Length: 283
Image (tube, rainbow, N blue to C red):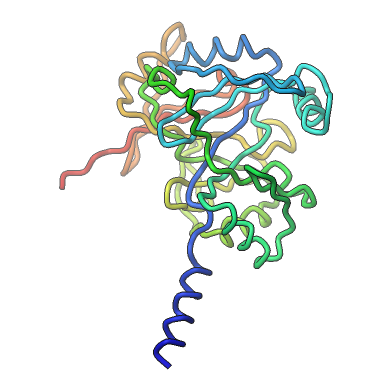
């Protein structure tokens, strides 16, 4: 009986364990990669050039040491299904095209999705949801650590350290909520800044958060990724760089746990970027 109880307990623990533990990256589709890269360098980011792709895709990476990143990406021509998707996306302007969550064990994530009866497809490095229109922009990945990464690729003068929050907006985010909840997120309502104050659902993961906003917050109709939050080591240093050449300084927004500045989509190629410094409390 004790053995059976132990086995059942282990199975219950395994089934309830988080199979998605954090954020992975946000691909930001841009029509002019060189210009976008220059704009992101002006925001204080170090960029790593991407590899060549057979379908003509070109990219540049804003990488962080924990494996999270922002990716600037373009497809000069429609050569296959993915590049056609990017070209259709860019017809409405620059902006986030996809969003990846971090699944450290893809086999476990595959099994969990099967248990949840969520249709999905798996290849060597990712899981996506081609049969579900509501989840077509989402995928699971294992973070992109490369042997060609160098210290200078992580040396962001704006002191950005990690992608810690992604903002989604839609009239019906029930499928996203079901997916996040099923893969281990704790979903609850909370006060958020986006950048104004509002009440919204937040899916909390071990290493990050996903904010679920109403469809009225979309920047382009139909695009669900509307913002991202980056943790920084020194908000004053970040703000000094972000304010260069601007007519007015960015406002500092202070909450109980953090201080932030928000850079508008007009400067970031189609999404809100929050630079957040956690407030250290005395121990």
